[in-house]
Length: 138
Image 1 (cartoon, rainbow, N blue to C red):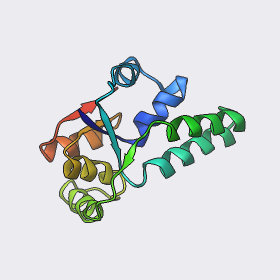
Image 2: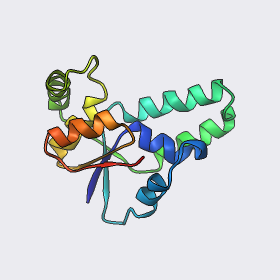
Image 3: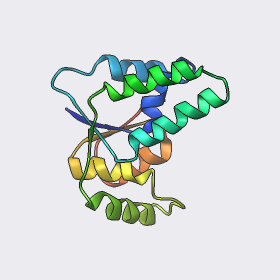
Image 4: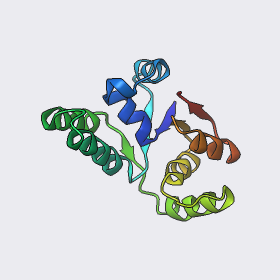
């Protein structure tokens, strides 16, 4: 299967305090044939959240660096289709969103024909409105 996890799902996998049983199940049940496809903002967003956690002293700088290494080892394919940005803008407009960046994950899931995986109810709902498979892990 092909999955498009958003940054919340990746961060929850990394930081134990944010992890849920459903997040654990998702990551543990990924198989060798499964693919992870990410929006272009996925790694920068995860990096930023990890840095915030280090700054707030939730984790150490060393832990943040190790977590970033873990993310980079996941072999997440970055979607490079330029249409993701226009589609994200359209989805944001259709769903009456103030910002379009979260909708980039939904756009990637649409374009790459992936299942959207999120902890965000709004992202989940937007994905369902686009008639794509979506999984809410909270």
